[in-house]
Length: 151
Length: 88
Image 1: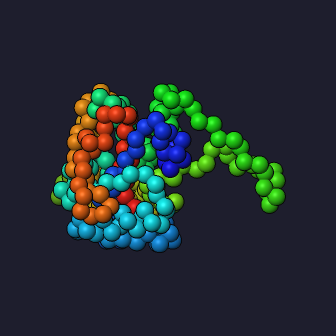
Image 2: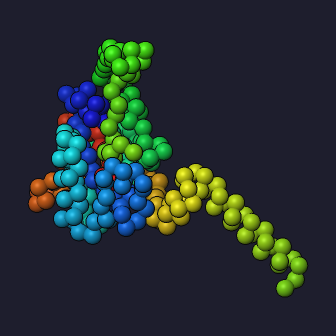
Image 3: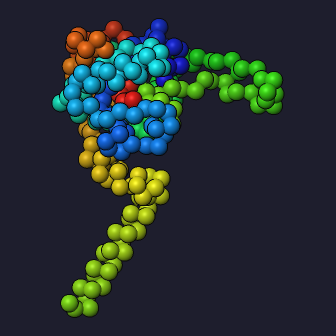
């Protein structure tokens, strides 16, 4: 997602909204959370949400604007956001794109396609083959980082 | 208990077991299937928003922990890509 932000930040605004945790230690913790050292209990206070959000920002040097949903989960409820979902709101304040529910239908490529249809595609040159693996060149676009850390 | 009810209960339990096995397969393991039912399903809803609807507003807190702003304040000039998610 950061790559999409970098490609289109001159054309569109971006806002990340932190909602209730998907896999906290006191609920449905995943093995990958332990492996990646992403172990947090479900926040009970807004201060705890703020602390976790700041940990995320610092760890990944996350550049996109950030807002934190309140403890009534107002944003989450209004947008059916949990556990993760994309929207695009157009200039008239209407929903222009509504992504599917993550993680199975969480598709940054659809966001990129919407932006590309309006502002043109951004091409990324293929990286040259590396000496360690001369046969396989990396993909032409960089991996898209979602709000979640790699799993 | 009559044979009818015995068979009804047996079939019901068998269907329940089959559903759990399928869910375990989808979720990755029986543990994940349990947690999906216990924690994910109650919070999982599709919502009613669709393309063309007015975007709902909500008040958010900034990373400094004290400044509030509204989603609506960030819309208007250009399209706004909103990314909902959490750390875990």
